[in-house]
Length: 108
Image (cartoon, rainbow, N blue to C red; front, side, top):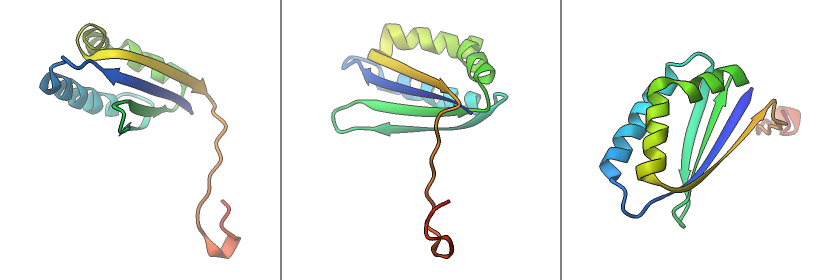
């Protein structure tokens, strides 16, 4: 598994409708890419958003990062939407799971 964590803050003067349209299109397009596993976005009270995307492998994640339509929206994000962002990426993250299951004492 390969994971990207995208933390961002949006500009106060950005076009929210344009951003939402681009975000919806990127979500739709990402789901169609080879190796896509999942993504979720979370918003904090202070305005920061965090998007976590999971991919089968690094090559699939990098192919998505380089997709021509995605690249165009990345450029628009830098020029029109984001005040700042940071991306964390890792291959083979250390994964620990917990599942409530009384028959096994709760550990999976």
